[in-house]
Image (cartoon, rainbow, N blue to C red; front, side, top):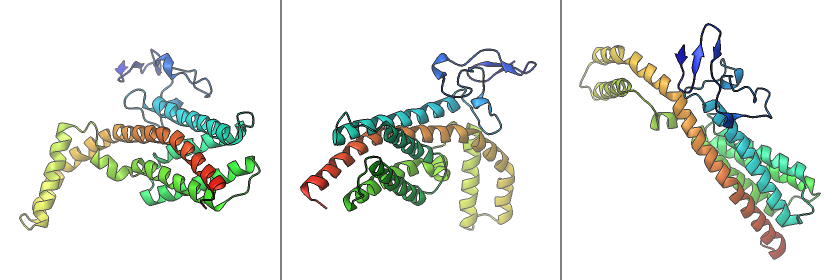
Length: 258
């Protein structure tokens, strides 16, 4: 049997011999009641090096939807009264929050992430206005676009995976650290003219495989950590953003700011 960090796997029968913890039950998902499944029953597309990362990602995405949904309900209650809440709108707002959280895992650049966030912010405002049969205003458009761009900025902090992975590498082996340092030092010496190209190539041949394997092994855990951090920030940002937009829209509509 193989021990895979959180449970044992029997290769003869092709199954785990014990289940995941019951707190990972997801009744709403197709395989959400199967605690013996690995990475959502899709090991070709997903990797779970710690034994529960795929499940945690699903829980965070679900949590972001619930936070967006709840924030919309509160915002509508404040703006239109608690008897005039459109729960379909709340569902759409929850999906927008889920999309902002998922953006952190796409690997897109920071500029594109901000642009997508701004577009999503305006799109959400337009849809919400349609639900309540309200006309779009300049103030509402500027506010929603600005807050959307800020959300894209937060998501982009995690979306820049290539730079963040190198900067925040988690679980890099000692051999990997030694190999990367040796390659970096040789590259600097070669650039300064202290060693020949042949000397640099010799160092690369000696350490490249170790460095690559170590980085490859550490990358999934690092991406998971970055995604978790950004998802947490989005979940915190969403209710604050929702209340701030509600207040600004009220001030603009009633006090004539714009």
